[in-house]
Length: 110
Ligand code: SF4
Image 1 (tube, rainbow, N blue to C red):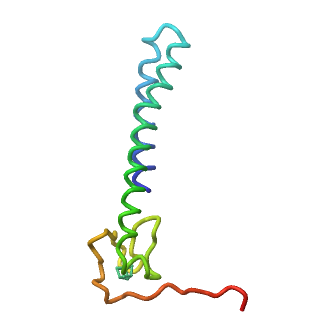
Image 2 (cartoon, helix red, strand yellow; image 1 turned 45 degrees about the vertical axis):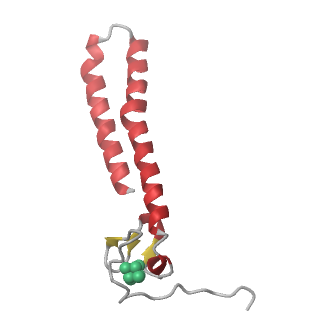
Image 3 (cartoon, rainbow, N blue to C red; image 1 turned 45 degrees about the horizontal axis):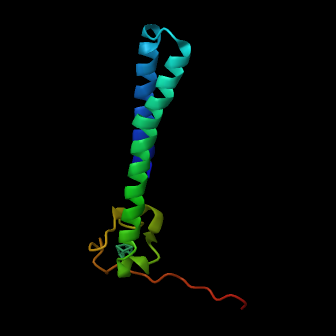
């Protein structure tokens, strides 16, 4: 998730610099704004949206790793093992099951 934000900010900075550099070459101020917003949509927002959809797919896949999905060290949103700081995938369990600890389930009403 951090990589999506990082690359989004980097692309936005590049668009800002390019827009600033092209400002004197575009005679109509309205056209310049239109160009800016279209550039932001195509260069910043669309790739970020694609990356986010890929990330969501990776999260869904990682949660199919039965061992990690039931472990208290698994951070589902980041597909990360908290103690080994490694990404979990469907077929890869970083600790090999040695550090598995069950998720605490609390009962309601007691
Ligand atoms: S400790 Fe092991 S089982 Fe638990 S999340 Fe990390 S790799 Fe998966």
